[in-house]
Length: 168
Image (cartoon, rainbow, N blue to C red; front, side):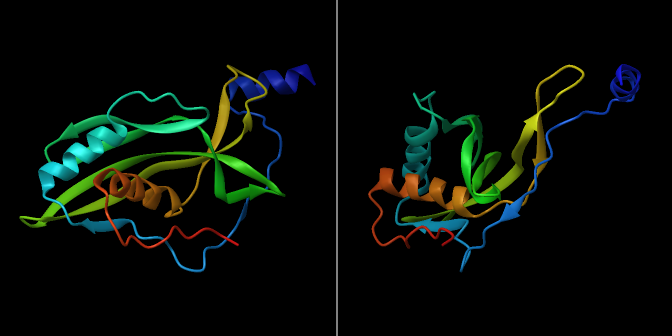
């Protein structure tokens, strides 16, 4: 048995507990872009106010990693339970990175689009080799993207945003 483990480690293989992923479906995907009734400078300020500093958070929060003009990159501090991805009845831990693109529609309206990169669920610990955790790439859910837009909208005092859609 130890020879097999040595061979797996040398070959770069990892062993993790077997996890089956099930996916809960949304009736309708959430918006991943929204036009706010605010000029681009005010929307920029709302993004910085919502995500611009390390926040105290119990499990997971987003902070600005990079910004330049009309673009912001957000990274996730911590890891959160997924509303979509499950193993049996247990929600899997989900993390992702997000890119926000701002587009002025007029002097008083700005569209914010949220693009997801590196969305992953935690599959479990690596049981051999250097340790650490094993993640599996998954499709973005539209839930996290719209939560970002809602947070920006709350900061701006935006009225009339559609409610967040969650799986039943």
